[in-house]
Amino acid sequence: MTANKLPTEVTEFFSQYPETDSFDILLSDMHGIQRGKQVNRSGFEKLYKGGMNFPLGFYFLNIQAEVVEEDGMPGVGDGDPDALVVAVEGTLARVPWSPNPRGQVLATMIERDGTPFYGEPRNVLKHALEPLTDMGLTPVAAIELEFYLLKPGTQKPEPADPPSGLPAHSGAQVYNMELVEDFGTFFREVEAACQLHNIPAATAITEYGAGQFEINLYHTNDLVRACDQAFLLKRIIRSIAQRHGMVASFMAKPFAEAAGSGLHVHMSLLDRAGKNVFMEDGPTDGLSNFNDTLVHAIGGLSETMAEGMAIFSPNANSYRRYRPGLFVPVEPNWGPNHRDLSLRIPLSDAKNRRIEHRVAGADANPYLVAAAIVAGIHHGITHQCDPGPMRAERERFDLKPKLPLRWEVALDVFDQARVLPKYLGEKYARLFARARRNEAERFHAEVSDRDYAWYLRSF
Image (cartoon, rainbow, N blue to C red):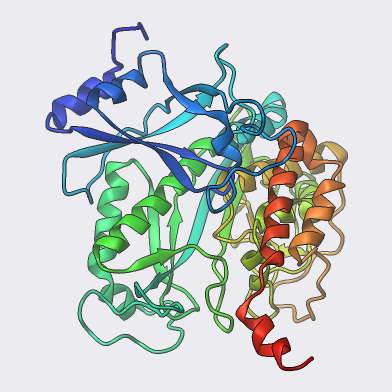
């Protein structure tokens, strides 16, 4: 690209939408929150003509967008310097829910010498992918996102009433097609927006919680792009829900007695010839006979799962999701066609053999979750890790919590991690842990209503 020439993607966009007068520049922070700037057309074109300045420190803000006052943190004591952000190719799109002509584009940060900024989650994923890429292996992934549609303005969350005006169903209505139709206008607008943004949304279903839904994305052989799509899908769902007078929440556990919301990742690996390396040779029933590469990959995911819990469950509410009986993993187990497992092998033919990683909550950052998964897979294959005994289809067993299911404990395990920091980048892992621990300490220093209810008159 020359300094004065816009890429074809941009010129075609302006040809199709010449009235567009403002643009949202979107980046993902540590939490997966969409942050950025809204700029006019001339400011937008700067993104393609050398880049736009943006502070390094914003990637390490806490959940309330406050600077984390920790030594060595970008933005703390260093003058909060800028670096450049540039557009991500193929992500420019119109914003269909905006009342004025507006566009949006995903951006990524680079240093002044053109190298990716180590602190951006998207770049962390690229770094974690390199060992697999060097082996000639390409992940193929699909992401599933669960979320709740809620009433606005309530002190405690309540499931939203259907935009159709019909009375809401009570209780869980998993796979209820009438309920999907009740929210049909919302889902059709989400689908249309996904098409505009080149996001391959596959299915929409009701889930186990009242007001809970799931949207699945199609498999793609570009893992970074798969995470881009999940990141942008959250924005689409939230924005269109707001247009319909609802709040869309990806909070991991908004209701104590209802199902939590997860972020599930389906992943397989292709070799240079395009063959799925998890595919078995010869006849198989898909329930008991799996090849060594798949088993070792699962072994690596099992071995690194505890290290990754601080990523899969990034805040205090995340850990309320881990309760037996709600299809939420609490130990690093594995097997075919069983939703009580953390690493599930879905029913499929040998060509489509894959692993479903079911640990992360919907509040997790998809880029960091994917980075931890590919790290575990590479570690398992290269070290021939043994995942232990496989659980059989329909097997009944008692779940025994073996993962760190409290925030501070998960952070302790992450601090002592020996595998994941090598893939995430040692510097990033260290700063990530500091930022999350700072937030954990602040959260637990708060005096809550439960403190007063239980203890004020008891002592």
